[in-house]
Length: 418
Image (cartoon, rainbow, N blue to C red):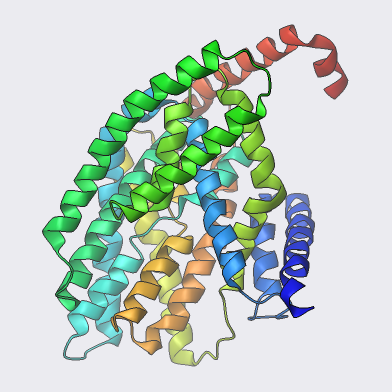
């Protein structure tokens, strides 16, 4: 019977995330917050009803791939290209400022002989941005296609690359087997590969979707999802770039094609019913019972405050420098707060290499969960629509055109839905 426990665990996760998601929406917060809280309550840190397992970990990894693939499908390549240089400046400041501030925080608590490597690594942990939470929240609030939303996506992808470079440099100091020039060449190679594959595969999908006889639409979503998984594998296994970056690129390649909307709906169903709830709950499940002292509580408070201030401040400054409005800059900064699974992966790497002392582990894990839970709340606050808000202009025009198209296509169905 024990071998079938995973069935019960998944059922509990799905029901709990749905229940707490509904409850959080009653409180006028994104349902993502409820899913994260559900994971914390179910996990070892509280009730210990559901224990972390390899299956849940694997499904959660697929979950963030699906979320980023869906984000790519709903993103305009033209809008993303416009945000390119601006996003680089935003991401650069959003990495450098946390890196510097958390290095200083590390210096306050660690004075060992190799403290500079440890403190630098702590800075690297907090340079990370987990965009999966932000993407799901923006989709729920129908703010994905805003100018600031596109900037967040572009900056998060660049942030991921910059984070890999920082991690490689720091681990290179501690592990002589790591070749820094080789890693940098792989990162450059990935972007060359992504552009080349993007041009070819976009034409392939565009031709296929336009010339197929449309019998059996399921194959569109199956092939598209398989393509996202393959791109995720290639980016991680061949180039050392995060798999979510590869899946996001796959979504961009398919975006704008004839059947993109159909594929997006089917991927959304997969995400909503199984993958996304497990991904969000898994973050809370990683939290273990922690015995805090006053020293650790003080460190935790400093980390939590600094994690918000550095990301919001760094990205806000970058956005202002690149001519975004102050309101858009604040939205971009809040969208980059979440550290999520990316920071956990980096922290695990540091523990494996002996770069992260036990003293820092618990406060860092708690802070990562805190930033993940608080991000949707902040986004809900800053994305309030007001008259004359230019950030929503193109988004509203797009929505209106889509609604008119749907009504003209099937007026009775839309009338009944209303």
